[in-house]
Image (cartoon, rainbow, N blue to C red; front, side):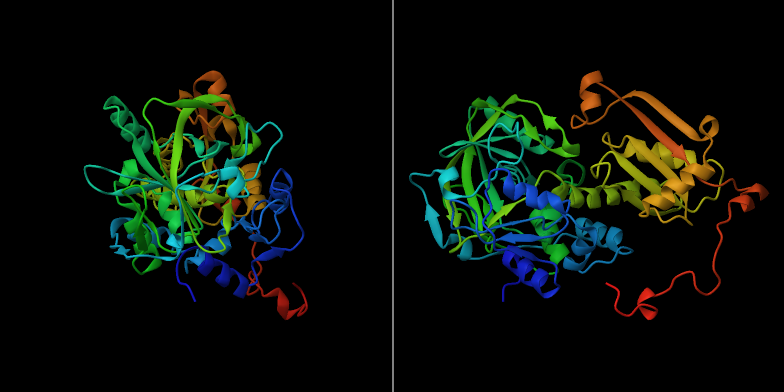
Length: 450
């Protein structure tokens, strides 16, 4: 039984009853994505029959918070500290002579649309897209490996367009272009929960080899093999690896593409990847993420770590929630143990200053379940007066993934202090409780309930 990467995760998902298996043939054009979207990308699915291909497809693995915790052996309460510990104490990897991903190596007549069931998701998408690919590069000075999920437009044959958003990737690409040199990359498909979470840690902020963060998260060395045609290492138990180069000063139009928050990203000129080799396991499984919730949950978990750390410098923070509805990047709800009247406003400033993407932040007391949207809405209704509790910052830097930011060039940010006053009047906000039965196990009363 395998311990690492996709097949190990699929086995555990099956054992836990969390994997749906679809034996009905699905079309990779629109239909496959529509099925993934039905459960908002929260139900892991394996499609055994994909029209025109013999390769199965797996998707929606990473969109449910509780499944993610379970697969990493985390609890909600210890997630922040466990992730911080992995970032602060990275562990070494293990390089193997060979591994299953090298069972098949193709270097000639590479035709990606013919080889793999790469989906088309939306009506106005410019092409089919590889959405789950984790791109790895190596820093030539430090030899550290950096990974990130990048969307990859299929341009035909062995060519892909890559959206370059990562500062690390941008800087390295521009540096090599100035020397008229290509950048070596590998695209990894068929990975697991630890590998994805490690890829979301900010290279610019932490500067840590992401493979070594992965080793720390999984509690054992990440096992790697050397690529066939480029000087990079990749997981030995991955399903598929596309190796290639980003040639200097070559661009093609990429987009539009329907992604974050359900909007189309525009068409622009972006670098291309020329695939020089494809490695894959026998009977590979193709990995898909319907845009864009899956990797954004893992990204949100990292943002929660960064937000918690930033807040803890100023206030007694209890918990943080970078929300689903805000795309795991625009909205945050924060609970604090309020000790001074200014704590709510201080928390707002710390949160909005933590990351350009944060646009709306709500700060509440530690008696509020910040993962219960109805409860948070109730707090907004009963503990907020706009003239006193609203903080508006106009003309700030925002996210290019926000259409309103792109339209205006800047973003207005809002903080809401929904904390109770500390003086005697705070008693008026005490929530009603049921003695001894505030938390009950409902199956005691309805044994057959599901």
